[in-house]
View (cartoon, rainbow, N blue to C red):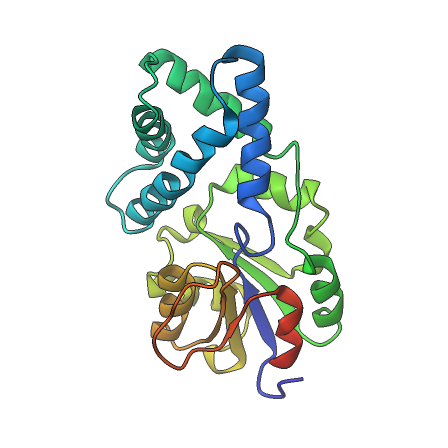
Length: 228
């Protein structure tokens, strides 16, 4: 146990909640019902990197919430050379948000590590995701009881990596940056953002990206026991 840390902040998507797996299941349901000529696996291969780039633009205030929801689909269909109307894209975007939380798979070790950490630290979430959707994920995945506070970018008014969201979360948690650590999968938003705001950080590098520099990182959630 790290004796200087009292509060542990987690990202939600791609860190605890298995966004890619749950997302693919939502799209598969939509396509099998209304777009049987689309192979879900082919779409997902295009969608994952496009969605990541759209989120990067969104968290840096380059596109709006609505543009994110539309563009990630439009660009994915374009990449597949699949002709589809804007009306149908908007319809899919709405169905996708509705179906996304019907499945709530978590990363391997998520509950076990939360059970391990809960008696030792106060646990919190900082997320850039949309407030209503994130609340449904947390509730349906039975994660709510583990966390003292949940900071959402819509409430804070800014997104990670902006240091203001970390300050907002620290104030909500009634703790200090010196006693806090952030865990997340997005190196820019979670790790760089937290470090620039004065918190310690651990990179959840599940995809094993090459990272230059001396950063705390894990490939599996249970490896957090090495640090906490």
